[in-house]
Image (cartoon, rainbow, N blue to C red; front, top):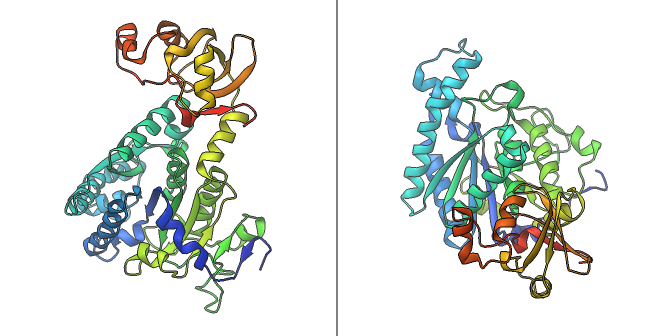
Length: 385
């Protein structure tokens, strides 16, 4: 056992899922699809719907990243096992996604939970503009109590723009929406010291603080017909989440009430970050992005920022440089002192049109209704803070 993991009891971790404000749950094909028939395991999904409704009922925001579309679509279209060319897989994804989304909508709807569908490709999380659009959609859905059901857009994605597994997609989604916890439901209890299929006495690793080469070497491959993930991709997902301040747990989804089981100290593996999503995001804004412009603000806006408020158009005196929505800018006062960095909700041309105006007047200046804030406080870091 390495110094980066623990064998001690996980009791201290049982509150993590309960306390998480925002949770992303990844559901693998091996849980969702009846392998023999190639049909949706409706009973299992019904039980998950009960659990998701329990989380939303206590005020938590939940997003689901769900595999299974291709497996369901292949059966629905009657594709034989040897019919696995790219275009056939994409056709299966297109058909299966309808079945999958309908099932989630129906079963969660029985508990009064609304559902929306989002399909993403790797490019959607790597291209800055598409990332911002996807993040805004996620934030809006979660903010109004809707559960987004997310899958890779396999019907249009080609090999060079695919994730290839939903573990890493789930991690990108968790980082994108600043989730507190990513739950990877699998067909095993978690990460073991060695492959439990080959070594029945292999010990479970309950807590990992740092993902080292030693930890990565303990991962195995997927052992199911439909799964494409395996432990390697789950560790890769945790590597994405930990710097973003998101805890990741690998747990056995084959158990009854798997989310409740996690809360009740069932065997699982936690990958614990050393920071929070909020702090990680602030560090990213402060140190990882190159500023594209400058906003000079008045004394009133400077005081508002010091009090933890957002930057409104009325407080902006001057715009310097050229930037687009989502870019990083520096905020300065009239004396030229750097005050903060933040991510703008408007381009430099748009800010020039609305600077000095009240938020209620920006629609007339822009021709559309945008955000009230030029920089929301969640996207702003005071220099020296």
